[in-house]
Length: 223
Image (tube, rainbow, N blue to C red):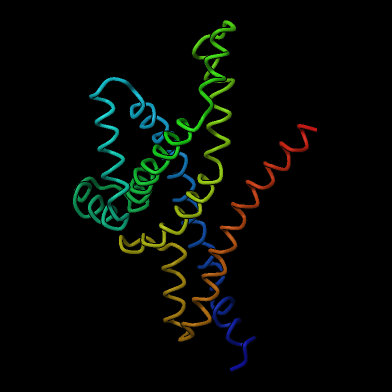
């Protein structure tokens, strides 16, 4: 069988491309929604982590330590087969919650370290000039913090997309599961897996491209 015939069997025959596209959409959906929720939750956890009060700071510290130290697959299995086993939640909903919790811990720590890297002297100077604490944070601290966090944040997004490849364990037909099923059906595991890897690689570079585009626009606006 020629390479063209193999590609036709894997990607076209029997509407395979539709199945692969549906799996890709599931992966993107879980990743996107989990990222939105995880970013908001991570910012809140970071807020608690930087409080002077011992109780919220301790809660946030334990939250980050537990979720960053727990394999995401174990967390997914715990929530799906344990915590929400009788709740009747859809597998995709449980997966979104799992990855939102996981990524929120990473983002919380990322924001905290980025916050600590900001120039405190500029904030003090702004306060001496009459800026309120909120204005100083919004105009000085926040832009610096986001600039510092941005490179790691984009890598976190790519990692999140890759982490979602385990959702097949809870019966979700995502891109990885579709690729695995297609490899078994066509008996072309090597070529099918390579195609799957290239799709994931393409998604990753789309993410990097979006961030690069925003940097270019900011650079152009600053001229």
